[in-house]
Image 1: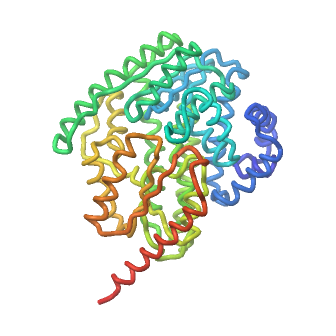
Image 2: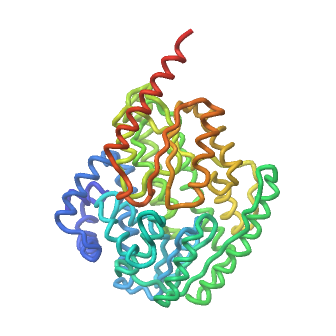
Image 3: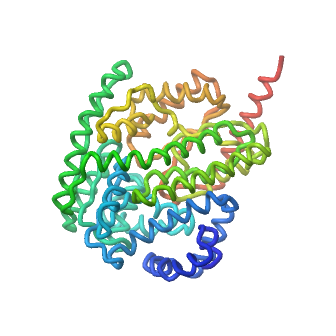
Length: 466
């Protein structure tokens, strides 16, 4: 385990101190010595562990996961989970800052990366959920929701005293949380809003949606007070928002290096690592540690850019990928770089930032969420993608379609048609489950990428003809 811990940023006295604790968590998760050997190889192959910033991020992900697995063993009297509830890390950070008796976490990012991306052991978790009510095959439910259910029914994580979700993006999450409440007696809470709007109604419709969601989110605070006995005030949330602003700023710098770097300074499959930093729980006192990890990565990427060091050759075709990197399978973005294409960005960074930030901390959290392209109407989302492709000089689109989600499957063909029509660039359509490595044929995807690259090169050659 020593080499694995080193790659995950644990060294010296800390590695010696944390090893028994991490070992107990790994044992509970079913991670064997053979898994550790394989995980060490996958870390070296798929993630840029030569960078200290990446190792620091992995360290925080491992610690968050271990803290969840061992929460009851650590003597936590109250355990609260959030699932598919963007922005909930502000609540979890406020709770752990207020009381050492509480464990609060946003599920399931740390398990998807560590248990899935590193050890390739998420399949048994998903299969456990499929043994209940979340089906595979022709009726394919989202692997993210399966991850939550599987972790709980296999007792890999403690049963929570409160499970909170939202209907902002996913209607299956609230339904599954309801079932967990009925079948296992887990207290639950859900907040929502009415997202009906057209592109022409912006920004008035978004202001209405934010206001309704903020009122609903305040009900979550009341539920937490009922279950835990701790009142979360507006000032507490604002303090956490202010403390985490530096994290948001540094994450934006990393995105800039990815978008502007030529050659691409780091493989795109590492993107999911820093993406999830905003979802992790950090007490107010520990937030600088997270900011330091991203700042370290920024400095290393800046040095790579200045030296012309990259994951693909300079001038490689620049493509945009829809949706984030695969949450549990690093092979899928890695092969894109291996074949000489640069994923310069994903559509998650395309947002509408021209709305004034409100003073109410609940509205701040909601507006920050609702700016993203996924939370807009299909028409406006398409326009954001078109504008983003033009701004970043994108040469091709990897149109990843998460087949377990009705929200993104409904938009996928519309985006493909619009990009082909408006930009006249090649589009590769990929059906996959963003959280399930089983829904993937590596050789077939590789062949499709090779054809896609040929199309990109052909168009590049045409562009050079006077």
